[in-house]
Amino acid sequence: DAGVTQSPTHLIKTRGQHVTLRCSPISGHKSVSWYQQVLGQGPQFIFQYYEKEERGRGNFPDRFSARQFPNYSSELNVNALLLGDSALYLCASSLIAGSTDTQYFGPGTRLTVL
Amino acid sequence: GENVEQHPSTLSVQEGDSAVIKCTYSDSASNYFPWYKQELGKGPQLIIDIRSNVGEKKDQRIAVTLNKTAKHFSLHITETQPEDSAVYFCAASINYGQNFVFGPGTRLSVLP
Image (cartoon, rainbow over all chains, first blue to last red; front, side, top):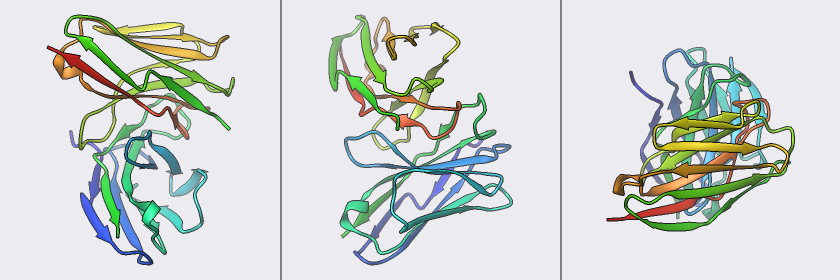
């Protein structure tokens, strides 16, 4: 069975640009969460979506936005990129938000902002 | 909000020895505590989890214990092998699989 997939694998952008990251959950999973992992730290929660609705939001500025599509895939958008946005962006999927199901992570997208 | 602390930040053990990583959490409402292993260049991989109504859970060489009163939980790896070398993260969640808060991680090195 395919796990969580993310694209692209790596991305290089310059300050001020915007970026779109994509995630496909495990088949049958309806919830997708996004995390930012700065080098040497644990992942930090950004968003959770379930059935196309936002179910949770972490402490990130409004430059960060996301959405979930009818097929449960998701996009994370970041506008006006800053150097500090350089990180590994992880997507995780679970069957149902807020259930006893755990989250399974994808390999991440490595974003470098120059 | 929830805050998760994790110790030690680095841990070196000899192959065959045991390794213990400890985490504390601040929000008594947290009810789900997974542990993830992250290898270089990969996303975190779930290795074991425990829910608040259970005090201990074991899966082969890996075990997790939870003390709700003290708000801490620990990962125990026995008979360590070189392939156990990785960064391990603990996490806590209110309402089970929502909004995980992760600890800062422990880099485990198993020396042959």
